[in-house]
Image (cartoon, rainbow, N blue to C red; front, side, top):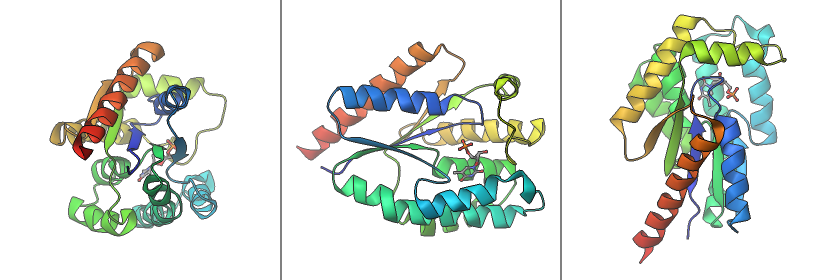
Length: 214
Ligand code: TMP
């Protein structure tokens, strides 16, 4: 059976990476074969692209350049890592994927959706998430969490409140448009409680996939 492709997404500071690690641990404990990865990144080449995108030195980067770099990183990541793992029946848990492009470059930077769809078709090469979790938090909560972190903000985390509000609203819109595949969860719930909801959904998706095979 082809592995399940599950994505964890939401605005910066939403808690997606904590939830991804927790789900991976629980799935491995239950005997599932799982890899975790992230976007932009996940392979040597894509991680190099990531450091160019996020470097605070690159303030003058245009939104078109940024979009194409995310797409380049995805094209390599999908072909080198994600698709081969799925083919071998391994479950892939990925920190961000295509929803991030639609939310940040579409709703955030106002790049037309038709362009994003065309570029993402090339980048993703037909690989689509089976399930995407979006952790919804207010921009105030996100800024509080980011300010509490000790590391310096990257180029994207230094964005304005208006930008993050558009992105957060964009994520909500994406989830409402495709409720079958995109699960919107309250990212301000306690970590354990939220984690239980995520894990329950993943187990449902595994069962559904098995049923579809019969
Ligand atoms: P991260 O800090 O969660 O790893 O994500 C890096 C940043 O990249 C984050 O601010 C969201 C942004 N991003 C996009 O704008 N478009 C994309 O397609 C992806 C994957 C990430």
